[in-house]
Length: 133
Image 1 (cartoon, one colour):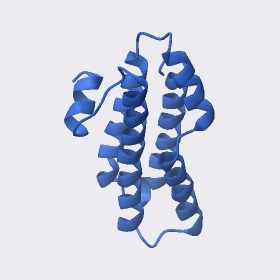
Image 2 (cartoon, one colour; image 1 turned 90 degrees about the vertical axis):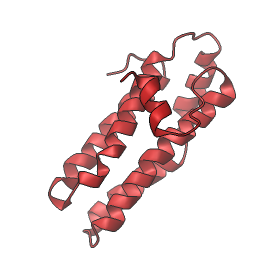
Image 3 (tube, rainbow, N blue to C red; image 1 turned 180 degrees about the vertical axis):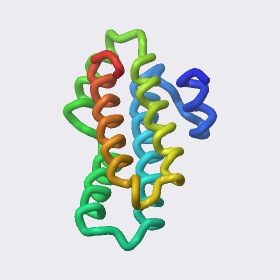
């Protein structure tokens, strides 16, 4: 499935990347999709060690709030950028990762959290204009 097809299938009313408002809303929806899945994992796997709860809390903050530095570059670049395929691909990877959250148990939680960090870092890079990894 192509990234935009996946995003449209998973997020009702996904606005895409055509204009500033659509890009802002798309960013919010993708982050919140992962944040909700991560929150569900945290609740389902309680009790967790303090360090794991802290790590999840840090990631929930990251998904709850826009990375202002990266988003500013994304917003500025969007004025001349015509291709948002790398952002759509990165967003689709975030959604696919979030969809795996229900299969995570305590034994693979740390690796899953590592994967979230790497995926969000790659998404930031795509938004900042770097090739998606």
